[in-house]
Structures are given as structure tokens and as C-alpha cells.
Amino acid sequence: MFIGMKSSSQLRQEALEYTYNANTPLKIYLKVCVSILDKAQLEFQKGDIFSAYVLYYRYADLIANKLSDHSELALVAERDQTVLHREEYYQLVKLELPAVLKIVEDLQKNIDLDYNKIQLSLSKNIAKQQKKPNHVSEPVLLPKTFNENRFNQSISFFNNMNSNITLENKMHGNNNNNTHQELLYPELPTLSNASYI
Image 1 (tube, rainbow, N blue to C red):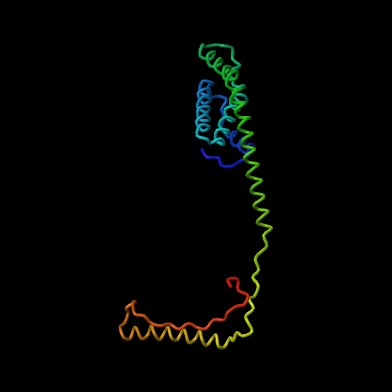
Image 2: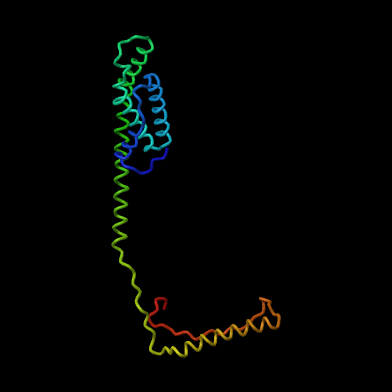
């Protein structure tokens, strides 16, 4: 059972989402309580405090709120089994429930502390992201000596030279990659305010 990062109030709501049937025998609910407690302890030992909290809280709610109104607890002892189950329930209330409530309280403090830290961290990150201005690029000013026509001619010459070399290689069947051809590159302007200079 993976719960994820939730507040203790969200986890409590999740813990209370279970079906209770007052007509189910007390004996069965006592077994369910033991099973819930075992699962809660297992989750706690695995380090999943969120799942453990949900299960411990569910156990406490079942014992303290639901089973306290169970019809078998109100009956006058008619059978030995009913008396035995009633005694077992009262032992759970007297011995285990206080310890479980203490565990729930401690887990709730840890969960709320972690949840508040995460929320604070998230809100700081969102605030930082909103404060960052959008980077607006400034136009680059070319030097006064830059001649756009000459630059375009150099690019055109370079493209023609490369296509001629490729065409000659194909015509002569010279697909050998080891053939060294001298490539001519266009003359590029030098920028006086370049960051790498």
C-alpha cells in the first residue's frame, strides 16, 4: 500500500474509508483488528510511515468507535464464546488501544512535520520560478566593416564548391572517404564584443 506524500488529515480520511457491518460477529472483527495491527507494524518496520499511520488509525477507529457499539458487547452473557470475545475486546481497549493511540500521535507529528517541509519547499521553488524573468535576447550588432553582400557571396561560393566536389567524386566513382579534398570556407566577420574574446 503506497500512500505518497499526504497530510495527516488526508491520511485520516483515507483510514476511515472502510466498510463496517454491525451484523458481523465480534469474533470476526477481533481477528480483523489483529490483522490490521500486524499489517501496520509490518509497514512501520518497512519504513512506510504513511501506510502504517493509515492502518494504525483504522485500527483505533474500529476498536474505539465502531466496535464499542457492537450488539454482542451489550448482550448479557448467554454463551461462553460471547463472554470470551467480550473479554478479548476489553483487553484490546485497555492494553493495546492506548499504545496504538500514542503511536498514531507520534506518527502524526512526523507526517505533519515532513508534509509542512515539503509544502514550504514547493512554495519556495514555485516562487523562485515565478521571479525569474524571461530571457530576452538582445540583437547582435555587427561591426561597421561587415559587408553582407560579400558574406552572402562567400556562402554561395562555399556551397557551390562543396557540391562540385561531391559531384566530381560521384562522377569519377571516387567514394573513398580517405581522399583529402581542400575545402574553402567563407570569410566570417569578427565580432569585437564577443564573449569568447
